[in-house]
Image 1 (cartoon, each protein chain N blue to C red):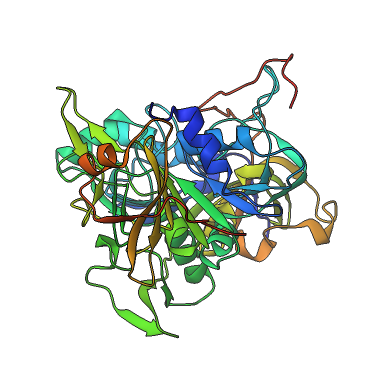
Image 2: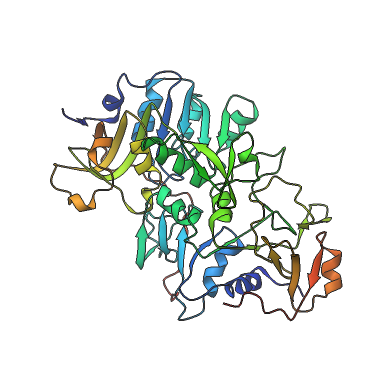
Amino acid sequence: MAWTREQMAARAAKELRDGFYVNLGIGIPTLVSNYIPKGMRVQLQSENGMLGMGPFPYEGEEDPDLINAGKQTITELPTTSYFSSADSFGMIRGGHIDLSILGAMQVAENGDLANWMIPGKMVKGMGGAMDLVAGVKRVVVVMEHVAKAKDGSEEPKLLKSCSLPLTGAGVVDLVITDLGVFSLDKKGGTGMTLIELADGVTVDEIKAKTEAEFKVDLTAKQNAA
Amino acid sequence: MDKVYSDAHSALAGLVKDGMTIMAGGFGLCGIPEALIEAIRDSGAKNLTFISNNAGVDGAGLGRLLETRQIRKMISSYVGENKLFAQQYLSGELELEFNPQGTLAERIRAGGAGIPAFYTKTGVGTLIAEGKEVREFNGEKYVMETGLFADISVVHAFKGDTEGNLVYRKTARNFNPMMATASRMTIAEVEHLVPAGEIDPDCIHTPGIFVKRLVHVTNPVKRIEQRTTRKREETV
């Protein structure tokens, strides 16, 4: 059984450490905030200018001046601070944020990431994604293992090299899909390693659905904090 | 010299000309200078270039200037929220320059601070770096980006005093403070106007030197793009 969106978010939450400042992208990454272990202090950064992001407001208490980067109404916490977009991206670009968890269209075995444009289609823009992957200390991608087309056909998303325009070159440290977890050596050039399987998923199934070359090391103790 | 004008239209009277470059604060519809945008629309000026993180939505923010086809070019990081934008862009009426959000913020900050260019690692190895100088510092590659400066900046603040000192509220701050510095003619709309001396000088976000004109907008319309809530019973 492949992992559900919730299980992928729960797996991504294992990358959190006490004291981390974290930026979560839109979609499955947003769900990660539901799996922060009790007692662990994690501050969520929202790149539109907030550190210490709280949960959604109670109905009737929405404040138009208080939104996250997905333009959703949110709340503040006792730890919250507000700042300008320039300060916000100073935090991001300056390497002060510990972890960024975001979605992707394609990831290559060398750590290249594509998640902002498909040529020929209306392009909405990269928003803060390019700054996040360039500046944040550790970049974790959470995505479906393959792209499913309307006719049911499947295209691999873990590739030898990205065919879509890049968001960042050599930026991804870890990829969590519905089938398993891969660590990437974005600086050292030793490539991609499959380090975990989702329940009931086999290495052969992953090989069939992956274009990228990867090693298998299911005993690896990844990310020792 | 009195900086306070009676309304957005008089604050902008005679300032907006065809072909100008204008910065408009806000992130999505949060912290946008809606009254000043409306006054720009009513000025009738055309072929405008707007530097703004987003392009509003249909019927709100800069979306209103798309309706009247007054915008020729947008410099933004994300523009997905309006149909009219897509139509005008795909038909070639509207030019678009994408900047990574942090690069956009820093270009504006640099422009206001007299810095003509800077190097950033954002976008190295991507389309964004094409045609730009790439230089190595301490073994890492960085791309050169230039500062941005506008003919006019329009910003929204929560509170302002008669000297032009501004205070923003929560995430409505976003691009407003940098944009206030990056033009020779910054006009601020404020929700609360107070006499100079009433705001604690230690709590001022934008010093009055950057603000040339000021208008008091009572009860501004503030729209929510994504209304997300939780139920009362839930414990957090």
